[in-house]
Length: 560
Length: 66
Image 1 (tube, one colour):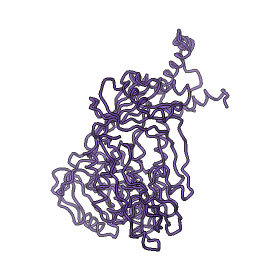
Image 2 (tube, chains in turn brown, red):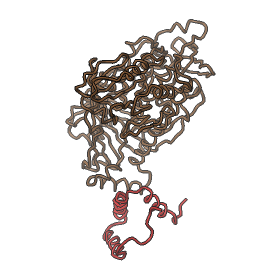
Image 3 (cartoon, rainbow over the protein chains, first blue to last red):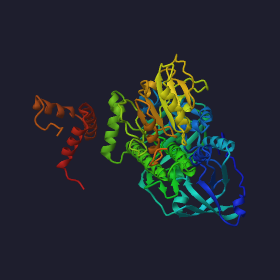
Image 4 (cartoon, rainbow over the protein chains, first blue to last red):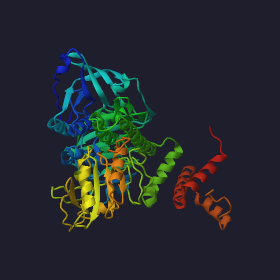
């Protein structure tokens, strides 16, 4: 039915594991080659950990599904070598508009300040997103991707898990040290292990219609409450790549999903909205949703990530984006443990940090749903009163909730953080994802996050100094030589002629924005985890403090 | 106790009259809507979450319910 995309079909290949007689043992098996499984496989492979990636299907997403990729996801993809392609292929946006009845009541900008590499969001159909990740997979050694290898049974043990895998050639068994289930909301792995995801089902139905049209709408998120073309309900409009537009109609609980999917029902609905514009229907789907999560995302040597671990309403684009952050959180921890550089205790913080994130996402998602679908007459009265005030009074705009759009979680209470000894202001508290800023370097980086990369990094600020004290140079070299190295980025102001110290790199804070965003003064330094979250910061550089904070960030009891 | 429960209105009778007058000629449905707008405007003016919660608790306290 799609005119702009046809799903590729990847061949089933027989694996040597199917002929080995005994179950072959692998270090890491990932189940599910969707956005989360692919992201995790790429991250682990880049860190030198080989993975087997199993998928029961033979293609990418059928239908556009998750289309809004948040700034933080794009920054993670930059680290994984796919950011540019996703941004190039998709459409960037930062502005949303909210309509009530026949009028726009206000607009908001999700990224009102300049000096960030990535926009607030890029919209791109999930099938393209997965195809771009698959391109990256094919460039990397160490990912054994097996299509039409579906997991039917899982037996968990202290040292790993044994999987029964179904293929067109029949079943075979595999052993692994670590298993990661990225196999979606219905997670066969979760079921096989008898584990549950619990929460709340919402009594409402929504219709997604993807239409192909040349429209004069700007690239913005438009949300209508009770519009004339769809009275009593809400509607959401998003632009995707290839002139495809996502239109999401609230239908109410009583709508019949089979009837609503029929073109004779969908087309008149769209004509009501789009008037005389010419359009073609690309894809239609009716859905309900659930907000729920598993109690823990780690069960011994089995991990759950993405929809397998937690499910959300679509308002706020928190589903796939939080799944990608799950992968970002797990990859470095698992790589360090597999490689013997960190104790297993580190892995427990995957569960604690991402459960906190899931709760934050579920809370936001539930509140948006309650605003969009009021559950009582009085709740509807307050909703409409808020909307009517929002047109005139700024305070009420803060109360309107058409979806609080995906923001990365700040792991403020993480056991991996070292508490501040010194005073700092601003958003870069321990646990926060590092803010981007434009920088200049001899290696050609344009952005701070690209320079940070995916290892432990120390950001050291020296202002306009054109020489570093001997003590600092020695510390930089020492950290670079540690077994678990810390790469030091020395940040200067324009005009400093500082040369790269051994083991470190000098970057220029070209517009002074890093200094503002991190509240930097000469001597300030930040320790960043491999997933670019802050874990400690000081007003002066002290080698022992840094090593202690690093040990804490990997849950090691002793410093190296 | 953040919420003032001693008399704080300089002219209580004037206020009460204005409040009732605000609803003149409205249907019950319209009155509900106006009340909701009024609560939202006042809540924003008060701002203090503790005072607001106390007010909500007190408003709800003597009303039954399942």
